[in-house]
Length: 137
Image (tube, rainbow, N blue to C red; front, side, top):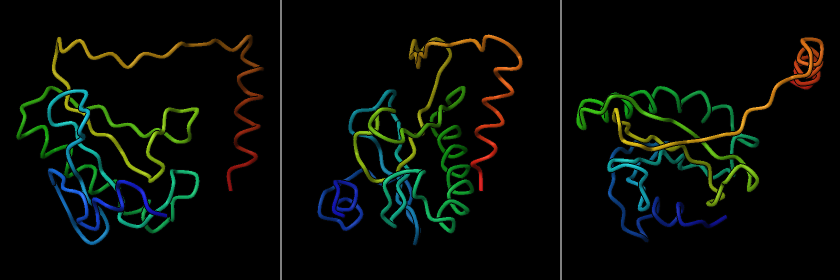
């Protein structure tokens, strides 16, 4: 499937490249949360974590670590947020898997907010855990 990311990977659309190897391309986001906000994109097309090939999944964390460490050194940031939106309900806008790596600074006022819920009882929490565990293959 052709997406804006496949066009960038194929050189059809210009980008500000941060990193590239045989399997991944990392570019600056055109709508950054903070300057230096980077997208790590697998060159092998898949939509999101739900259909991630295991060979790509096994390779992504070492690359992610390299980029996060490089970002911390280059930008002297205090930390990074790493996130991935999986599915439209989770905010995914480009349906080609990618991770966001966002440099963070003390006092930058960036907020990733979520509402929090509470399990009614410890037993209810255990029931959710069991339901998920049963489907992990």
